[in-house]
Image 1 (cartoon, rainbow, N blue to C red):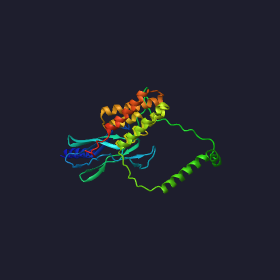
Image 2 (spheres, rainbow, N blue to C red):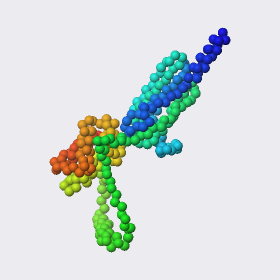
Image 3 (tube, rainbow, N blue to C red):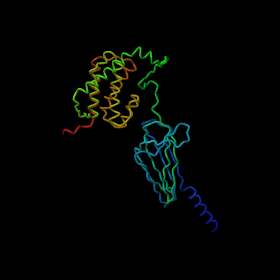
Image 4 (cartoon, one colour):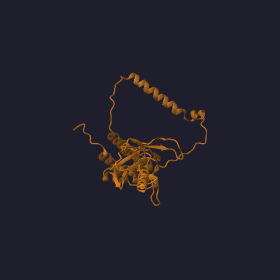
Length: 314
């Protein structure tokens, strides 16, 4: 009888020792922007225990810290939750609860996924925090990632005000006379109040395209022309979809646009305009007048296809 009681107590001790065991798993400690990170939580508990868990919604609680830093860091709001699921499986006298999050980071940094709380039989606990590194897509051999190249020429000569006045003083004089003339003209002219004209994003962008076309800058400097053309497209897409594409490469730009699930035809036009612009800016390709006009029309088509429908006059 004593031996049976001993085995019974030993079995209960083993079950209680394995109960309430929390485990945390991640699919990778290093992840690229726009790819999926899978986070899994597991909890082993005795059969009949009550578990309460409320998953976060929208963005996963996360902080970004500096490399090799133990500081708390700053809040990181670019770790999006794209799916969540949980399940409970019975394994003998215990139950195993499992929850899976699928996340996508939209920016880089050393990220600390914050501890997630749970409640077991009115007792509060936390799953452990997780450290991951988010980076941009690395360059691959044979695949060129285009970007805007800038150069800075340092000025070794110190600025001398007297030399500047002697050399450019006539410009300042003309500017001063112009300002005085404008002020005088406004005083003798009857003031008229002009109502400000409010233009939509679509109208502003189409006006910029018309000005670019009218300049015909490709006849004298194709690189400058396509730098301005690609800037107009990136500025419009950044404002239209609330993402920053002005400092992104063409590859990163298309990666972020695909995540928005845009129309395939629209994505193909954007890719064509950016790729042809990069080929002129960085590979020194020369395009014909017909190609210049065609790319401008393609840019105009992107604006028309992606702009919201104007219902103000419907």
